[in-house]
Image (cartoon, rainbow over all chains, first blue to last red; front, side):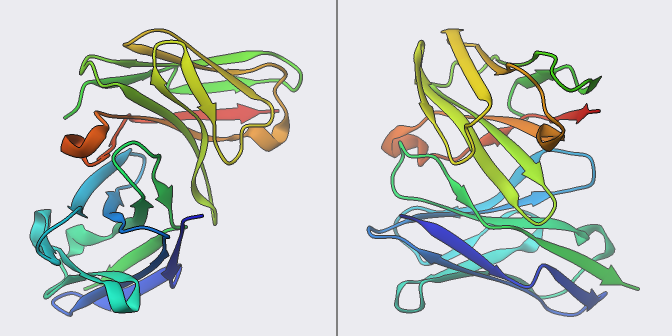
Length: 113
Length: 115
């Protein structure tokens, strides 16, 4: 069975600092990996995804993530945090294009001025 | 934005009453999903559909049923609502298959309160 672990339910960074949100997954087959962002009182929006190919994936709003098979990780990073990045972030895994996503419990990012 | 609407957006009901939530899409995507979101639990899959009249259970399906009689609509029914079903419910859609990579697009959510 697949599972996703997001380390840290709440991460706080200063404006301009590096953002690092951690995600580890378990999957018996090569996974599809996703990061979603949720702003208050809204649905989830896709930030980026990894399916095959290049392991460093760039997404919207300056975020990127690197798929590391040996570490079963897909951590999300952004070089410089902005106040507008404050939101909840979810990592998700899927085993194929036809299986539902399994989500982590989410990490709430706060950005301090 | 993907064409997904959910209705109602907010609902307050009493324990024991039936409730139906509707998800409507204009994207003609094959797959549709219902999730619930609760603090500390992230999103948990309730049911999903992989075609008209084709559905399957998710992680937290007890107390819920679904129906999909046409591609664009996916209904979630709480036969007899309980306070533990107070939650925010999200619908999602995806094309599925290798080309789609199973990227899911989410609706705006329905906030359900069961008193």
